[in-house]
Amino acid sequence: MPELPEVETIKNELAPHLIRDRFVGVDLFWPRVVHEPSPEAFCRRLIGQTIIDIRRRGKYLLFQLSGGQTLILHLKMSGVLLLRDASHGLENHTSAIFRLDGGSDLHFVDQRRFGSIWLTEDENKVIGKLGGEPLDASFTPAALGNLSSKRRVPIKVLLCDQHTIAGIGSMYADEALFAARIHPLRKANTLSGDEIERLHRGIVKVLQDGIKHNGASVDTYRRPDGGIGKAHLEFQVAHRHGEPCPNCGSPIQRVSLRGRGSYFCTRCQPDGT
Ligand SMILES: [Zn+2]
Image 1: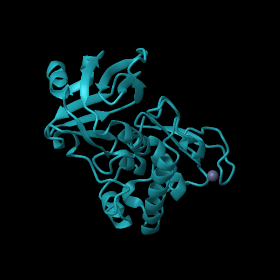
Image 2: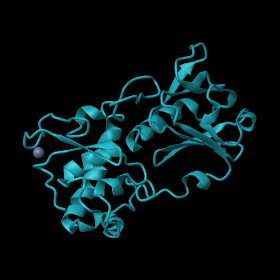
Image 3: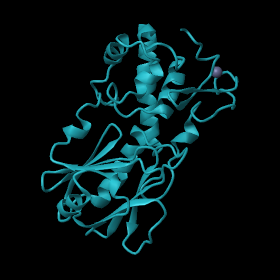
Image 4: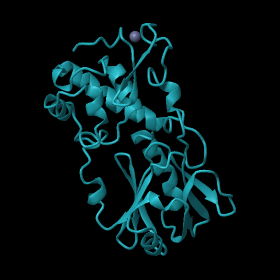
């Protein structure tokens, strides 16, 4: 699933192509991808609007439009946004094609069909309940300590809770917890001040590294030009079940936590619960 570094990469790579372009057509092949308004109203209202800016909030992409509305996309499990020239054929699993006057079309390809699109004047209806951004200056060790001290859930669950911190998912939570040498099942409210400091440092580092390497292509993630990201090549534990821990050589373990695989080293991240 695309997380903060993947969505940030997509935003950075789409912006130079699409800002100042105008929507001239929309083809909806999977109308249920549009959550608001109706598919018909969506197409009618979008066409003619110019893209003023593209932003990211958590795992959401926000296209700010000339008419005062915002086009919001969430890629969920498997959504991919690809820039194609107008002559490009239709590929499997395409949910929508946005046609723009700048020479590129934007294809929303989504194998699992969980991706979502909104067109709204009030973006807070969609993103208003998100937690803070982990790469903002306001995300300090003290802020992380405050968030975790009130919660008895496993720290991995807290890190992936979008209403607590926005943008972190399973892969980068595993990497941050390994960097901090904290077991993913440790209860959030049992972390010491020193552990919170290490975890904060780990979160910031793994997200910045993820962006630097243009996101992680462990599954369906692709960059807008169709190329892959390379962040997964730097992963220490995530998606490396059975491989030797880069720190101690023990085989990396995998447990299922709330339906998602969690990867960690039992020797470097002892279970302190
Ligand atoms: Zn280890």
